[in-house]
Image (tube, rainbow, N blue to C red; front, top):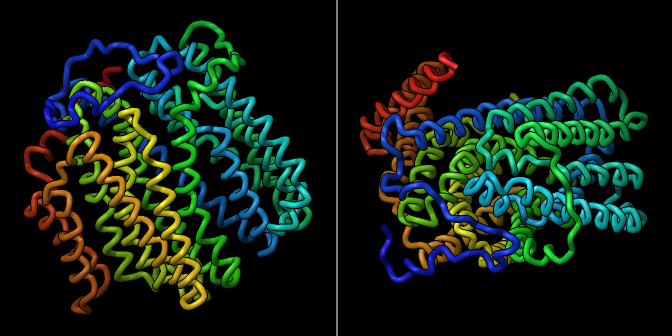
Length: 520
């Protein structure tokens, strides 16, 4: 048990007890970072990671296929318009979500019986926010269309997707740890969009408006499916309430998360907008190619973060030190999975980009190498955010993210005119480093020092050895890749990234999961 100076105030209740009524747990404390072999918590955590991992990988693969098809079916102007409209709606999406999902998920993870009340309050407020945001977007369509060169009807149709976002119960299923349903729904939504664009989108100008229609229809179908599932699980219809008196309490914790996420959106959309403003659309394309590859890899860290969030929420109230150890372990596991891909990308960036996107993206390999270093910082950043949100302490996030975004923008404005997409990548890396450093200090002050140890760095050291093997032209490519993979595995185990007892424990948990699935 953590007994430092922050022990008694490390995990305070949210500001409004009436809004987020966190009931007393009936679970015992956690003493180990990874629960004992065969324990229910360990099996559940592994099951969550497996389901979310499979769902995330499959959904991202389908999403990549959608992007490739639309890039070919629409002309450059049409595809760019779809991307800009989607980026704008992403910002509006954050306003509708209002940062309520993490605390709502946390409350349901701690007390599943609170689901009907939490659902009624969260969805009610989100629907009101969606109506207000959609109305504002439609009123400002002429100005938005002119400023961002987007057809007004395209943006108006995309804005309708905010209603399914408001009604979605995805966060509730995560709190219930129904990760198989979450994974299946995510895959199904992407498959519906893929089927829709294949059937309806054939030519750019004529079929452009069908893209948002397909997206909104798929999102609405999945939101309805979430609602039906939750109603059946509860054995009754879930009501939606519009009680304005409860909204300030809900937003007291959600607003800081929203402000933080809006600053964080600089990582996803900000560089592309800066490149379009300060450089050229071609430079933005060079950056986007690399960013798409890096975001695909980042899905591994997202899976581990989401899978561990319910357990972290339970641990952090009774034993913050255990929650810190758990997230240190999640960081290590994410780096173990990502480090070989980072090594391959650093060595083979040029042929990799050419094979996937074509030879015209000659600047993208340099951008990709910088963004791969950014990826490791983003993974650390995500673990630190998970700790603060699980501990109901998101209020420092907006200040840290605003400062990091400021560094990001200032460097982008200075470097993009000089270096184009490479300058944007350097600015992104610097901004992420600032954010991670600030969050590490906040977590240390409020919860205690995260026990990263040298084992968290072991995967990257092993990846460096792997990159050395790959970069030397001593044999053919297949043999070098096999040798590099072997060197990575031996070095990772030798440096302590994974101990033998952990390997045996993970193998036992996988056998338990497989056996329980067969017996079920």
